[in-house]
Image (tube, rainbow, N blue to C red; front, side, top):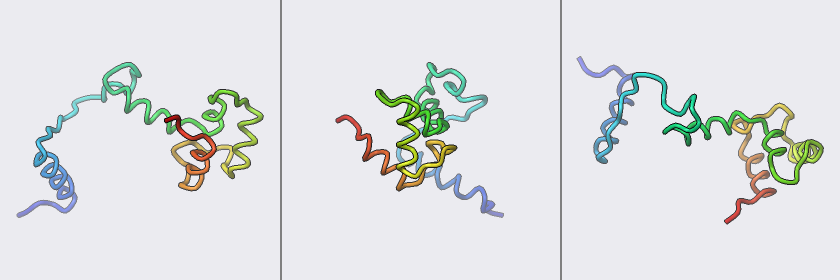
Length: 104
């Protein structure tokens, strides 16, 4: 009778992936690295772990920035005291990146 509408996006993704010669692997359990930061999924683990950190803790982790300076910076940039990194808006993210440019 046809493909259910909910399944259609999955089939389109599968078709696009296989058209480029990639192979999808079915996961039968937890993704390696989720619980073991040294396992094969360590990059994924780091990505999600970093997003869950509060902005205050991220700032305090930078060299030369303590709790007082982190609080001042957070306040100057208009970031809530309870905001997590993954919840930053585009302007807040841009303000942080301008304040702390990446080393190139």
